[in-house]
Length: 212
Image 1 (tube, one colour):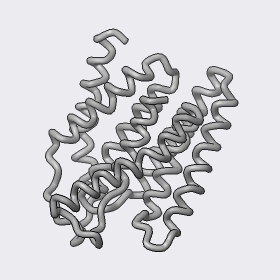
Image 2: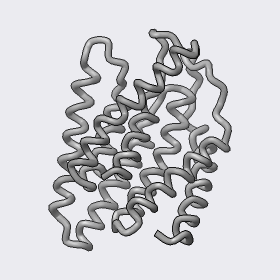
Image 3: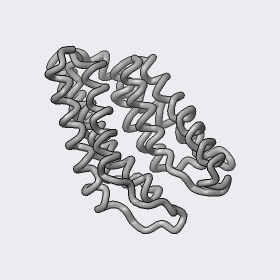
């Protein structure tokens, strides 16, 4: 991957992250369970640059790259909302799901890759079933916003292949567990404190896309 496209991708990601804060504000509602200050715009801008740059570096020749970038942009907004008020709004999750379904459907039709589209649909179904089971376990902290987000991201992960789907299912729990442990040790949350799992699902899916 040459420096030119990668630089453009990073700049676009920074822009997407900067816009994400403004868009997230439309969905944030006060939540007494969240005592954190609002995240600065700079943090989302950096996250956007890293997310876009990583995807272009790892999957620069994949015809589905534009679809992955659109989902990543929506994911930045979702992460900001979840961090601020422990919500994953249905309209945003639906936007990510529709972007994946329509975009990958178009790529499959253009490239004659119906098999990959079938695997993508299977990935969404497997993610949905797995997260529903986890959400129904006694004491589970998963909400059905997390379930719907996991299903939406299972579609592009399935498109990328079974290894990507496996990583995408496993990594969020590793990342989320490490983050929660760090917050507990730092005294920022208690065992009964609600905390956002959406960012871990999104980060796990992103890493899975890079590793696949």
